Each structure stands twice: as structure tokens, then as C-alpha cells.
Length: 338
Image (cartoon, one colour):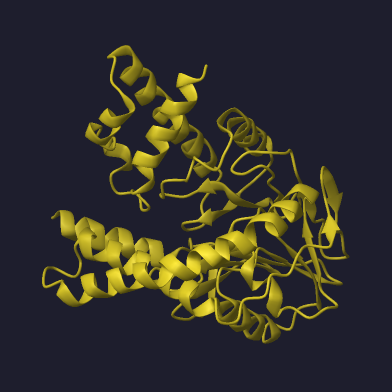
């Protein structure tokens, strides 16, 4: 029965579109879902190399791309798909934050396309990408070989969560290993540190930054007329977020702010599109980690005892569950400093 539930959950993860959304394109890497006329969510497909979600927004005179995938080859696939949609010319690519899975596709866009981020995000990319790439050249092939060996050795139920986890992580390391042969870091050259409109005859497009949250600097894209929000990694849907790169009080403030917006559809950084309900669900997850850590301190448990803490029932079927322990330890260390 549990395997059946997991299979159904996986099908929902892959489908990723509600009755009000239209599936326009599907490949091994992502599904393109029309959210409104001229607005699309490009949703990472389980087992593919897109890794994160991307937005496509045509304001009636120019098109913006929100985030650009980990793999340049998948970003090139996205370009081909967008060309077939008959949209306004691509003028901007927005980097929601500095993590590699949201920025490495920047390089496939022509020099006429401007890359937008906060000024801090641009600084972080410039500082950390050379370091991260060199590190990844060492560990990515090793991790890929590890997951390859797990795939070959596995002889159980291929609908079981254990096997699906292998299929989820293997493409990440494969995309890293492949992209290092061609990746060329392209830095943002237009900066939005508070808010800026990129309006056109079809719709208003608002970029908003309120500083640190998931990272030292985050940027969201909001369509007030369409009631659609592209939240980047400030929101994960049915996936454990990665807290150690973040600033929890500010992240919670971000979630409160996004929850105050008039939104019908949220495109998270990872996971399927959802209603506005996935914003408070993210807040509840973070607060639940805080509560677990407070309980650990109350019971005089050490940080090493975090490994004995089970994932709460409501999050056991969430993906990226390897982040749960990291989140607990991160929050424990932070509470130790208070």
C-alpha cells in the first residue's frame, strides 16, 4: 500500500499541473505548463536534469525568463521550446538567487539578453562559482559513479521510495559532471535591490527583493494582474527546503510578505506548482524544525542526537529528505548561539 502511495505521489510530482493549467510541452527534463496567456511554468521533471523550476513571462513587448536551470544543455532546450511558442523576444533572464541550479543556464542566452539579479547575488556568483565549480569537478563524478552503482545493484521494487531517491539524485550529479566541460559563468548585469516593474501592454511584471532569506539575497517575480508568483527557493512544494544557506527569521518574514500578496498560483523553486497554501506550508515546516530543536534543548540532547530524530509524519513523503538532518543541525547550532 505504501508503495502505491509513493507511486501516486510521484505521478502527481511529474504531472505538476492543475485542472486550470495546460500542459504545453513535455521532455525528459521538464514539463511546460501554461499558467495564463503568455505565462508559463517550466517544471523540473523527476529524473531529468533541469533540477529547478523556471518561469516564462511575456509582458506583450518582451519576454522574461525567471531562473535558467543548472545545465546549459537543458537551458538550450528551453530556448528551443520558447522559440516555438511565438512569444515576444527574450529581453531579460532573472536570477532569483546565487545557487548553481538557478544560474548556470545564463550562458546560453545571447549578449542582447540582460541578466537581472540583486547586486549582492551578482557578488556571490562572482565569488563562489569558481570555487564551487572546482570542488564539483572533484566530487560530482564520484557521486555520479556512486548513484550509477546503486542503480545497477538495485534489484527491489522500482516503485519503492528507496529506488526513486536514486533516480532523483543521479541526474543532479550527472548534470554537474557534464556541464563542467562547457560551463562559462555569466554574471548578472542589471540589478534590482528593492523593486522594479517591467511592464508591457499585456501585463505588469514586478521584481521584488527584501534582502536575505533562503540565501544572502533573494528576488521574486510577481504578476499582480495574473495573481501568479514565482518564488524561487523561498518556497519548496512537498520538498524539504535547504535551510543552512539561509537566514531563518528573514526567511519567515519573506513568507509572511508573500502570503500577503494577492496570489492564486505559486511556482516554487522546487516541486510542483501550487495554490497560495504552499506558502504557509513552508512557514509551518520551518517552525516545526524550530520546535524540534527547542525540544532537543529542553531534553538536554546534543547536536549528534539529531540523527535520532525522526522526520514528522506530515513530512515523511516530502522529497529531498536528506535535508531534514542538515536542517535540524543547522537550527540547533543557531539556537546554541542565542
